[in-house]
Image 1 (tube, helix red, strand yellow):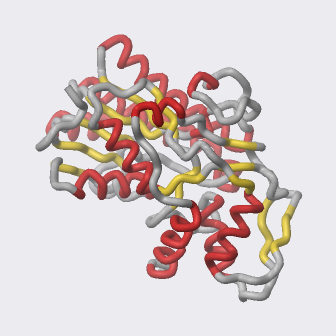
Image 2 (cartoon, one colour; image 1 turned 180 degrees about the vertical axis):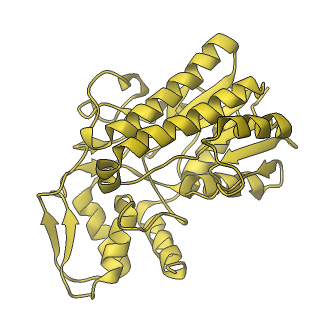
Length: 310
């Protein structure tokens, strides 16, 4: 029996975030499911007792755990304690609370940053825990690895259909464009937009690291695809299986925004992973493919940014 069937109730934890909102919209789109969410003002997911009461009262057939504290290199470097502490709290509260509430189906949104800094490319799921993590986001990665391990342990010991998806760098409508906490895509869009068209723009690092990018709507499609299957792998990479350099990404964003000045590189700032590209052969064998090309996705994200800057 698939994790989801017509009429089921699905709770999306983190339904106002970048990926959570995309999953929420996708689940609502065809009117097949009763989709629920709660803002942080309505329920603090770090409160384990309140979360458990909510789950026992609502009894959703499935949970999507997309709630997390996230950010780019700057945020991870300056707030490592929050990135591990808050995320561990949320995961323990929702995943363990779901188990205690006898909820059988749960999708946990992981991250490709769980993989070793130095590993084969593209990165297969089997690379997990085969080497040291990238230091700039190790606390966040360790929290995600703990959540993945908890899901897998409940799956093996209690037969829960709990599984983890590892997307690459996500972007799209609803992204965080705050310079203090944004990821690379949102940071570049804002940076090029806010500079005069012919003035130089400074970007962090050398521009040589390679990254894989996936639009949040494609991530949502992959998650629903997996939820609607009879069984899903315990952990599965999501993505395009291809990457571009940060320099190429900056040039793409510059072209979309309409900036014509020079791009300068501040090599005193960290690069992070030298390369991070998911091996998506497992998901592709199941029959899923992404639909949104990078430049098309960047244009849509930029239009959303301009319309929602305030």
